[in-house]
Image (cartoon, rainbow, N blue to C red; front, side, top):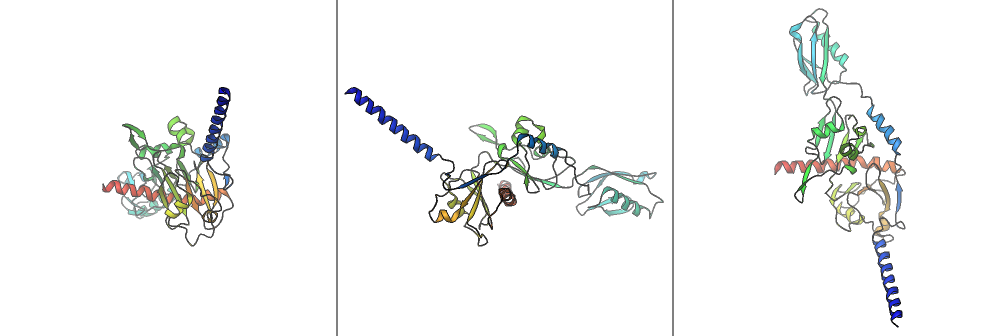
Length: 348
């Protein structure tokens, strides 16, 4: 009799454990496949990434055009009084050259500016021989936002690389957690955008492992974002009435965050919403039908911290086009958010 009771007890335990395990698995399903369509963006293999990084290291800078704050040495042969070691292009695009005064040089190539100065000097000197040598080039800007000490726009000086920019921005921002100083930047989700394309830069490998292949020269218009490793947010961009970032809450769903964004604009001609999850260099993309959620045909999509929800005007055929369309809006939202924080910190 005791043996029968023991056997029955063991069977009951196995049933309970089995049921509990099934319930746990069901609760922790990342994405219920019967409701959603997932597509992976093609990612580069390691050798392809190395090849692209090598090309980015060797990228040819565009033809140099003189711009504001550029600095020059100037020499006029046999005219020592006209030699100067500091000609600075002012914000109006002019520099002040001895004897001839203001000369507008912004947007000119070096050879063109030299020829223009020579022509103006000919009114005073016979056959002047002019040489101007740039020693500090500040044309072009790059934006770095997120968890650096001074997030803002910086002028590119000479051949500036990613680590140079981070150093100019005061390094990675620090915070305190349980009385310990910690870096606030999430390097694994940090990214750089050039011409609306995410470059394959691994910020963790660069900063933590010293992989200098990722330390590429910067170009005008580059945009770098280092997100917080602590903040838990969800971004909503595209055809919604209020683009922005919203504090993540446990069990937050797609339908809820669309409501936080005040709903869709009339210009949204589709009920298809795209969601980007994870690193922008290796994202997971989901295509979700909002109408089906609202009509109760499928479960509402449960969000995770740092998800990006994008509402397009019309359906998009290519997943890579989804990313291309998201980036400008995402940059605008992030820029506004960071600038707002800077203003608040300044006022406090």
